[in-house]
Length: 83
Image 1 (cartoon, one colour):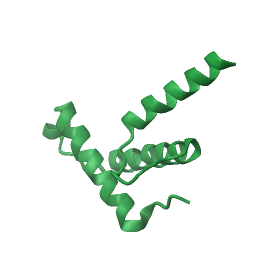
Image 2 (cartoon, helix red, strand yellow; image 1 turned 30 degrees about the vertical axis):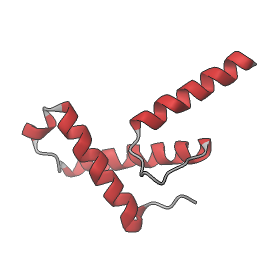
Image 3 (cartoon, helix red, strand yellow; image 1 turned 90 degrees about the vertical axis):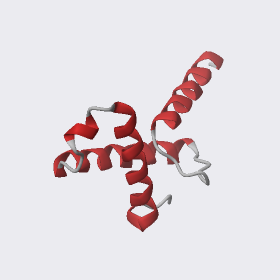
């Protein structure tokens, strides 16, 4: 049981590193899962609308920074609620 709990906590720690968060975020596990789900939806919308410039998309770091910023703006505009 202890190993399972540790593995679960490690998985959430890794997930929190991947999804963009705001400095004020102190997310519970369920909030982390909801935010991850919304981030996946956001990324899908970006791919569907083809907003990324293909030249910039070729640079993984820059593309990640740009997506993180866009996702944070999207969240702050009220498109997603923490509740």
